[in-house]
Image (cartoon, rainbow, N blue to C red; front, top):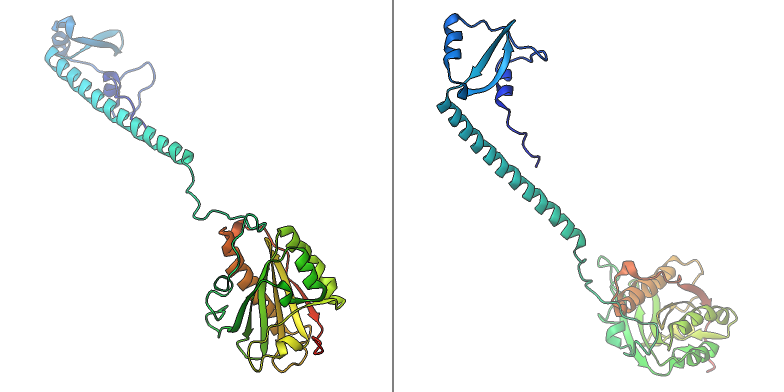
Length: 319
């Protein structure tokens, strides 16, 4: 709030009463009568508050009577006091506002609603995975407007080779795999069978190494992820040629195996199979399961490597 202008002086009020600006150094030509002039001169000098040159060759005193002078002085003092109080109040209001802005600027930010949790190793993240954590709602709902993935069977297994055969199983053992939690599901259309789960490795560096090392093992048919038979009519997930994908986050390795219910091979460019891999690895296991374990806002999470998708040959029926 700006401070008010100072009150006008008596001389300025007198000048402004004419309704127009006067040239500098001049005053309007006032020709008092003889009676006016003699009356003004007869007043005591104590009443003079200033002089102006008026007319030509005449100097006349501008006078007010003493009683009126004191009234004006008292009134002016009251006005000045009131204006001073208003100005001081405005100053304190502005000062308070500025102080509030400064205090607000220096105030500590709101405390975070979640504390990050380190999942870089099993040493700092010792709690084992459970079925309730990996499949908390049973059937997996990706889109509420669509039917869910039907959960048929779950398993917690300390032998990681139960879910990975050949050199992939050996690799996971070497990387300190302590358990695998997996489940078998049927797709909403019923055309596909899916086995998906999480391996619990010792270190994040080991999970990242497995993420890179598994590709050549699958391409060279030196290892495979095992599908898990759930009930009658789901044998294709363990025996048929399948599409697989895998992904890592922290000290965990996620994987997904897909097969057609009728046992027919899945085309490399099958859009439904690729959508299933994305739903299982990215949306469910990463976002709904492992990112919740980190207790960290999504915007602060480091970018993760894209999930790798490869085809693997059919399992041998000879044991």
